[in-house]
Length: 286
Figure 1: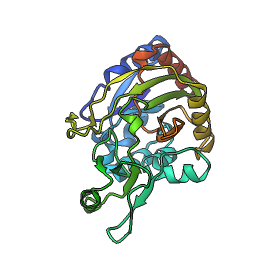
Figure 2 (figure 1 turned 60 degrees about the vertical axis):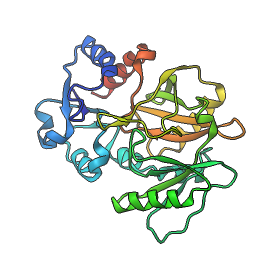
Figure 3 (figure 1 turned 30 degrees about the vertical axis):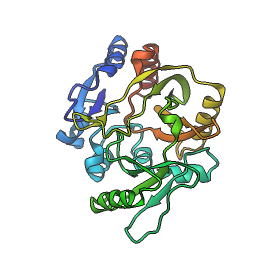
Figure 4 (figure 1 turned 90 degrees about the horizontal axis):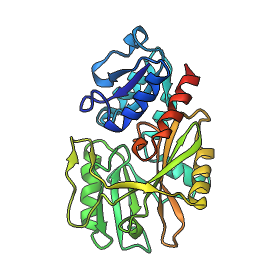
């Protein structure tokens, strides 16, 4: 079977060593495939299933990546149609309309489109709708409309749609929580420290993502309930893995920040048994 990755991580992220070991323990051969350096039509010569793992550079060539998936002659997990939906964060507006508690999100598609800073907040974030690892995201004081407008225009000039969201102060207090799900079942949770710091941007790691402090976290029942609402609202039932990232709103209730169903880190180091669960779920799909 194949695990898809990016050129900067030709043998995957170290965290996925847990998964590789679990797959090999089940008698499966594992091949890392750099998506941007391979012809998808040749995949059937070496693998019978492709699982997306560390394809973190896909945002630089989204259409090329989606075409690569569409041309794959072997099944892909998660599916190309779900990847297409999940790769553009404007899905947050869709999920909010479906009743999922979500960080308020406005999408901007042109410089002529009017916008305003989120009311009731001290800061806001401008980020590309297609992006990963917080690259291209910036936070601004709500009085800095000019700075926000300049960043919006810079992203639009790159051909990117833009999201505007309030910056929730609980992020600086460590409220962001990622709930890992395998085969739609909750596995474990992690906490993520703030990446958009007031003192300036964090240096990207290998140009792929902003460095972040991670730790294990015990998910509350409310966390799990919000994650369940997210999973119910997804456009597809078939789901090998997903990480649901939540953050506390002003009233302390968790809000959806992002659904990671393309190539999320699953943080097996915090629960190695999760790699065993994922390996079993992969075997079921072979």
